[in-house]
Amino acid sequence: MKQMIVNCESKFTQMALIEEGKLVEFAAERSQSESLVGSFYKGRVVNVLPGMQAAFVDIGHKKNAFLYVDDVLHPHLEKQPKVKPSIEELLKVGQEIVVQVMKESLRGKGPRVTTHYSLPGRWIVYMPIADYVAVSKKVLRENERTRLKILCEQLRFRGEGIIVRTVSQDESTDAIKSDLDLLRQLWSNIQGKAKNAEAPSLLHQDLSIVQRHIRDVLNPTEDELIINNVKEAAVVERYLSEMGQGIHLPVKVHESSESIFKQYGVLEQLDKGLSRKVSLASGGTIVWDHTEALTVVDVNTSKYTGGYNLEETVTLTNIQAAEEIARLIRLRDVGGIIVIDFIDMEQEIHRQNVVEALEAVMKKDRAKSQIVGWTKLGLLELTRKKVREDTSVLLDKTCETCSGTGRITANIIH
Image: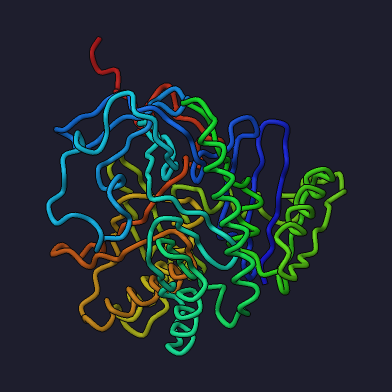
């Protein structure tokens, strides 16, 4: 069972997701400037750079959006030319173009946009010009994968693309068709607005943080949603009714004077989970450090001495650390390159056990990740895709004295 706890404030909305009593996701969104990812814009090309094989597009925000050549070519790889054309052959300065934001403005860079349009629904992701059907790799039963692929091939029009989501397993034809019809209508509305709109302009805003998580995460027959705002609860219930398809997720309004996050233990778990040094139940510790290029995690046995021998003690600590690191990567929404310095193990089978423990928990994460493997120095490398602004931006700020390093220059010159 999962619980989604929503704290609505005047300037932002915060969402905490709890699975089996553990905090696994925390996200925040500014009320006055909601997330750009997933939104559609009619933009104008302001610069074409053949040296970068990219263009910059004005979508009406402070920083122009970045459009790479691969995101202009056909989304179906088999329909792309064998020799990639120059960006100058595809786009011209002043050209108006419909784009979708695929990545937020991060670290001073403008948003990244694409013409590979996609509209996620409850059961499927609709891609109006992709011309292929794919089934989530997390649908493991081969007969069910085949059923879903054949069904969507029958339902789609020529040129359309569909990705079948994991939650579609054992779902009825009517439910999937209803989802597809709604998404087709949404795409038609976007196209209609694009014909009459002046660039730059917003054509379609993606769902709010609460609605996205209801659509993507919650199981209406098992999970629970608690929110501390009556008006927002009504908005959520209206959204649920619009989704249709027999979804009856109960919405509970928190009316106590006590903070909703305090009552449900979110604050305590968040404080521990976002600390630089995190203690494991066994007595071991994991230490987090962030650089501009990567995140480094160090594992230590600390107070744990529980195994029959050193190798067993080390392996048990590493496995427990791997499970906790996977949860905290999702909670902290860490993106980019991640390097984990586990305690040295002598046997290859033990290293494999640690990787399997990490993979098992990371499968629950919706963000795309890849475990690259062990380096010659015994470090484990992985990557995780990040598309939205760091939640930490709303939770903390860089120290003005040490610029986030935790160190200041000693005054040794008199």
